[in-house]
Image (cartoon, rainbow, N blue to C red; front, side, top):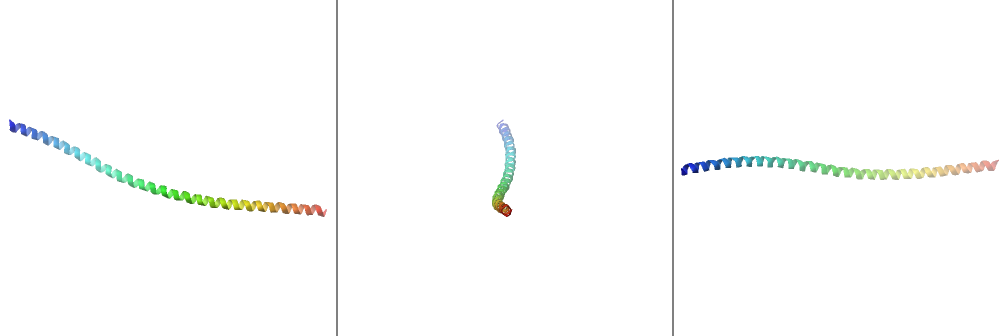
Length: 102
């Protein structure tokens, strides 16, 4: 009877051990998949950070280009205003000469 109880207990213990081994295997599989996912996510995050860094550089360059174009535009507007004043002065001078000559 003692031998039977010992064998029954041994069989139950083996069964529980097999179950726990299966559970451990499943947990290890999940952990391995999570590690792969984590590695993939880290790689994607690095790519995204690199892209953000690149885009910040593009924004800085665009701001620089915009400022240069704005300066160029301001110079041309000033030049046009000066030429318009010069033209107005010549027209006024020409008109005053025309009146003086009559």
